[in-house]
Amino acid sequence: MTEQHSSRPAQGFERGTDGPKVILVGVDGSDTSMRAAAYAGGLARRQNALLAVVYVQPVMAAGAALGAPVADATDGIAEDLVAQIRDSAERVKGIFDVRWEFHTFRGDPYNGLVKAAEELRADAVIVGASEQAGHRFIGSVAVRLVKAGRWPVTVVP
Image 1 (cartoon, one colour):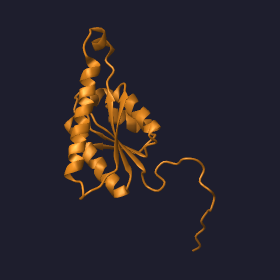
Image 2 (spheres, rainbow, N blue to C red):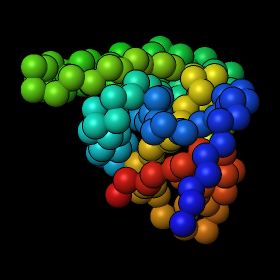
Image 3 (cartoon, rainbow, N blue to C red):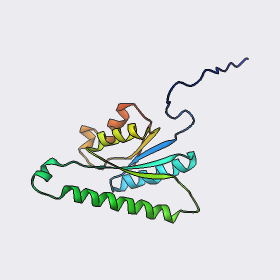
Image 4 (spheres, rainbow, N blue to C red):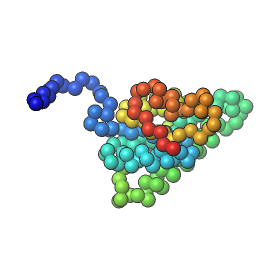
């Protein structure tokens, strides 16, 4: 049996051809999103990939119209998430080294994660499973990401 190998040059950017270079994980402070971050961190370490931790700040026009300090509340959540991630990274420093960045996008979770994945050129997207009962009927962010078919998506329970 003879093997033939093509030596044609690669054309443009191709996601995940040599393993993922950028692994994106969506976090929102929920238990499932924090488990997804831990899973993604291990995957990034094993693949020597950059871990892009993304928090999508919700845009709540109704709350803002009523004078509610929505931006302050979501900024606080983002700061708390960064503190939790830094604390976790410090605890495993010297044992496991993971390159990571924290990014904040604004919008609804699905569109925010899509925008983040496109801008950061993610090779894989990791999210926590939704804990909301209504998502069984309407469709969760995870299901919508899978249906988009643009990236490998891992859903962590």
